[in-house]
Image (cartoon, rainbow, N blue to C red; front, side):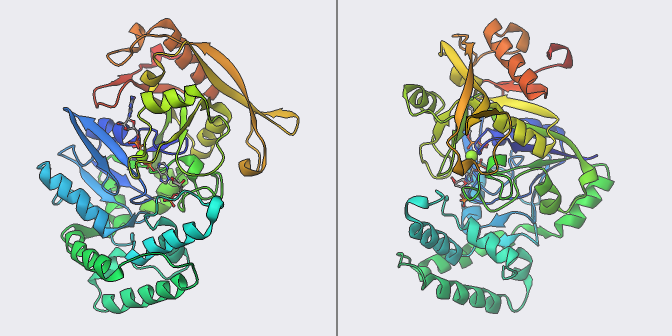
Length: 428
Ligand code: GDP
Ligand code: IMO
Ligand code: MG
């Protein structure tokens, strides 16, 4: 089993980029398998900060290959911007950043369709990042999409024009939105040259041959399991399978190749955009978490909604993903609190349940909370589990018991070095 997986267990922004960057040094290949520029993965090391949208988070580890898999949707304009940032930081990416030919392209008109559809939804809008994700995946499943490999075909311009015309026809059905297609097309075609300067590969052959040759692969998820198109809080979801199953279709590997599945959760919970969030806090504690955790979107800058950790939700996504270990992030954000709450069950329609209902959107959920004494100690410099204050240790052990999954990593700050690894003997 050669492919380990890192993915988010909540509604995104769990700290995937940071954990991938730390663990990448022990792998040969880091591969993104779904999502696109809706993702914003933050990496901090040596006092520098980078936000990646399409480029895998292994790019700063010099020795390894980074693959943008077939399940990803690529906007060449965003990708070019990211590559320019790598050039500015003197990161040698040539030959180390590969793109699967079967990955789909986001056209400027996909973005316009995203905006038009959202605008037409009024107060029912999803809160999309407006990066064209939904319309691009719709064209993929609708069998109309343009793929990276098509750029190499002689009739690429005809294919582009046909898809653009189709989009313009659709846009005519929506209330008008403001756009300058000519200017965006110029940018898009110019940035295609940067995309073409990367190595295109038949990703499925590339990855399977690498696995056969004994290479270690780390698959990097985007978004979070509660945004999965099948199992998330539909319709307030993204348009891809964000769970472990998406690794197989998004890279072209068999389920039997999956090894460790590292699920990431914050020590509390956030969500950005619309949709249900049972443990959301609308009081000063919610505001405290937003401020202390600097909870503002890495892609859109929007304030994130904040609330307590939700164990029924986490048990659900641990089940869906086959999580073998958990990385608990942002525990330091809770440092100053006197007490914390954990949601251990949901109460709806007069019953308590540890399972999620069919449709979170159509129930008034009352979270059942248990409280936990805070540690009121700064954890940002903590080096090992043993020296953590007792209340922090019992919080971690309690979560581990309730989630029936080992917590092998505890993140105490945004920097690469602020990560505590727990040995098996330290676990409850
Ligand atoms: P991703 O999308 O899952 O990669 O997460 P984001 O980068 O969107 O959001 C996570 C934010 O939390 C970023 O600003 C990270 O730098 C920051 N972060 C990650 N881990 C920690 C942590 O343990 N403590 C604190 N305070 N910040 C963290
Ligand atoms: P990372 O990888 C948090 C949310 C949007 C919106 C919904 C649909 O950084 O964790 P879309 O643009 O996909 O049509 O938006 O999903 N969303 C994210 N929320 N983190 C993300 O990515 C997200 N990507 C999309 O806010 O509610
Ligand atoms: Mg993010």
